[in-house]
Length: 345
Image 1: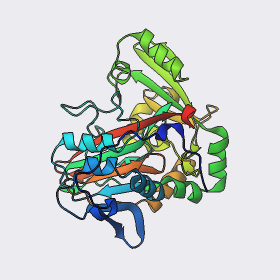
Image 2: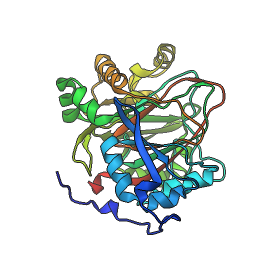
Image 3: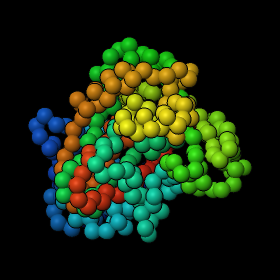
């Protein structure tokens, strides 16, 4: 099916690669296993490829592979520094990298590369699409393995088209009709502060941001409460396919560890938790529904052991990601680009 070229896909890069023969000859691609189309593995066919230059000069190959598979694993390209990773990620976007992300700490020396989510090593980070709970989100996300963990620490991924198809029809229908309401209570000492999230200590600037984002807000003693209505299901702007696109698992109270859930609910009501999500009409999402959603994600997910130097490139609407628990030192850095809003669709 042919689709009209959206306005945010205008090419930006004209730089040619340093090697003159065919782009496809520079790399080879294949699957991790015959029954695992996700991610597509891309490896160099020759030495000393200028990866940023190759990506900038190969938009058709990159986009075609990304829209088909949802994720590319670039392996063996000898990325030696964060600067090289950032140059690659910049070249692989058309709108550039996002440099104002409030939820992750920036990597030292860069405003376009971020550290991994601060989260206990021995806990799983559940599946989510980056910033799908916000009014704008990255179409492309990049992970670079600086150091693989001694044990565990994989980044499981799952095709959100397949999640949409596999979920029970009544659950999908409910989410499509009701949508979602994300609630955040920025309270001192719990989660990120509103000053760090909004990158300002001026309430007027926060209020202007919220109005521009169609986000409801309420100042409370000692903090800020925000409410953001978002879809649970969307159509991908390039492929036209429906995807299950949300952050239910990062916000629903049933996804907390039992002891954490019990402790928080002994202090807060459900709508006053640091983070929570409801149906768009404000009614609670049943625990059984969330359990069914989580089950489908894990059944369809795939993972791989990180190798130092690996780069994982995702279409953030087509693929959701998680993180397994790990032991030992681990360093994965993240970049995001091609930010879009609902107006781009």
